[in-house]
Length: 413
Image (tube, rainbow, N blue to C red; front, top):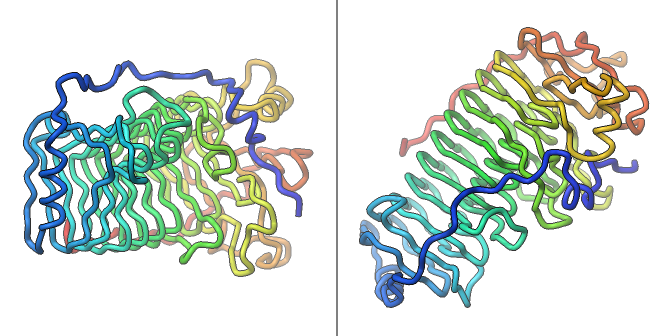
């Protein structure tokens, strides 16, 4: 099957009907930064033992190489995300700012800025807490920025709360291939993806603010990874004005995310989007899509990968604005053809792909449908399988509901 992206990647990176937002920050002044503390900090990380609390004082500290921690049961604590600042603008060695391969780990009350690669990567640990941490690339949204801000991957029992992620060229807050995840009360701004849950099992994303990103909140499944994701609840968030042009690296999944998207579900199953404020996202407030719309070729998919989003519930969200200036020439043409020069897309866009193998008498089974129980909110099936030939706004297939998912319970929350 030939793939059709939401917009061609080249257009996504170069053109944007939504324009470019820029933050007002001019970056941390390093003229008075402490350049000698990093040796002490590296020794503390090397000498840490289970139960150690590494207290970092207030100040701006210039770090020129990757920091790492491999010991379980350690807490790293600063004096506040605007008081304790580790700045990596002059980083000459290492792929991350801080790389953690440990369990029972907590990091809190500090900032990590301007890393060459990812700001904080936590790999294969259990019982992880990231609290009141800021990751930021302070020179504004640029493709040259590191990919991820807060980045737990292949972890279990993960809590990310009261943190800030700004300027990542992929995702500000990204949790991948993990189980039992809570992401709450964070702010993600000026990233390509504000908050991304990818290939995770059991995740709750709530009370966050995602604004000024390319896409606000993403729930993705990608092929050729160790586990498929399902059971994610996105609720009580604000995903507003995510209209920053896409500055992701060409060829990455997020490079095909249209600027102006509030929430995106791609290829994931058992997802609830409810009780959110989703507004003023110029392409669409919500997009539901298959992997066929993410720029992947057939050869990239493993034989057991399910590319279709199924069992999706969109309920009781508060929508306003948006859909009036979609990103990319194809979407612009579709909007004008379907809704007129001054019209707007409905709040929900669906690419229209369904798995023919699961159809019963030509219909989706009740437990696999995309259900919309959201007042006057409408949907546009863009008819991606037929190259947008017959887009329609028929709500009939989506007037349904699904069994509700259970809350995620963490032992450390």
